[in-house]
Image (cartoon, rainbow, N blue to C red; front, side):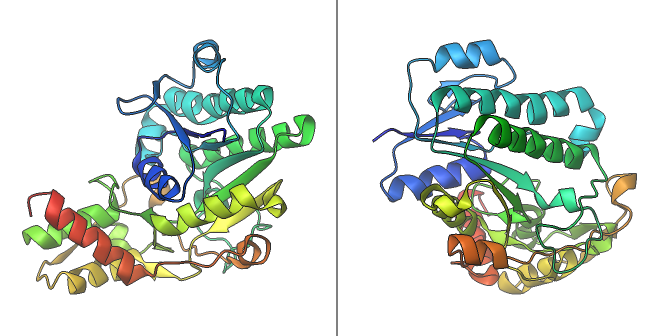
Length: 301
């Protein structure tokens, strides 16, 4: 069986996906910038990427690699666009030349903007507000071009706020959990007024596997989440309750001027349910408890 190529294999979602898919019998090959990957290479360097992988054949490509921190994108636009747009194009070209059965691109719900019609459907207008959002929309357009013009079997997932055991310590869920376990203040950017759909990464992994198997997925864009609206303040309060913490919530200003207007966004997942047979397999509190227990055991709390 030809392996799957996971680009961005050593990040939070990549590590989670490797665990999930390998447990289900998939053969995997990982590419990343950091040690631990089967191949350490910068995807912005197409010639080197193609040379290193010229003897390999992959059944499908799952493209996760991106500069995903919005403030970092805003402060270094060249790096953001090179990684998120040029890097995606390079991986698409590699997939075209190999002739893969599936190319799965992880995009972001941020492309819909801060105040889309609710619940957000895939045909809603896009309204990016920060450079990160634009970069994800441009990567989608590159993928759609390769599908339409060259027949690359593309699937695009627009993800809401995914969390999990391997998440960055600076993510909202990790920060809130660590603050509660250590008895520190829980800081809420923009007063925690943003509303999103936080969900455990196992649901994303489940959706990716469905897309690998379902021909109905090809050429489609899917919202990914649970369909539930949760404010960041509510998320912090839930974590505080689950950890039995007395930590105090402290409001902070927005991280960037673009984020001053709260994002109010949660998805309709009807299309993924209908075409993929997708149903969330882990709820919010169960997922949070898994991460709480993981961070309690692995972060010296």
